[in-house]
Image 1 (cartoon, rainbow over the protein chains, first blue to last red):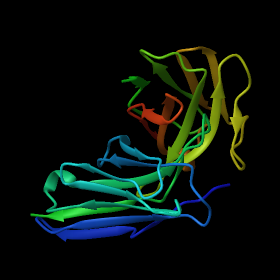
Image 2: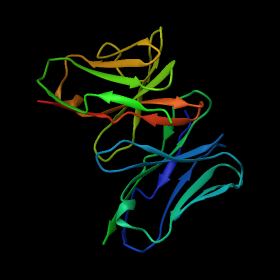
Image 3: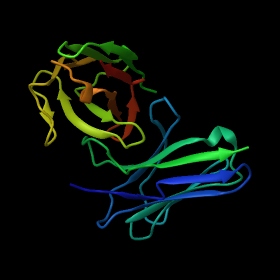
Length: 110
Length: 114
């Protein structure tokens, strides 16, 4: 089935530094979703991108969908300790289950 | 938004016993629910798709006789781990898709088999 590759697997940053995680697919994605899972918690929906080249912002978070709809990125500006967690990209098609990337675990050093 | 309630949030059981995990969609009628398993520091792996009123669809490599899924109503799906072994210890989590795209997850159940 469809697979989304996500990098990096881990990222350690100093508080205030920026952070980016990337999601790539060998085939065209119908859409891309991003989720955040805090340590010990469950994934929480952040955003969905559907259109080619789409860019959406949520405060310090910027989400991009590539022109070819084969890659996506999540960028966090000036990280805070509250950003700690694992960020997953996922692809969904209709009523089928989400296919998750392996996730990027972000740790922020105060 | 949709609220999904999963119970219990954690359970410890002895090897050989069975454990039932409930997943309820509190404000949304879900004909389909999904069960995932997540090992420490790993991604969510889909185990099965639970279909209301019919048999669940299991992913390759998931034993249907070991992980029994029942979806008797539009708001409740249960996952029973039968004859649990220590290697079944994991984080089990259910989800529903609302508006056919956005996924809402239960709180998850941390199972430890001793």
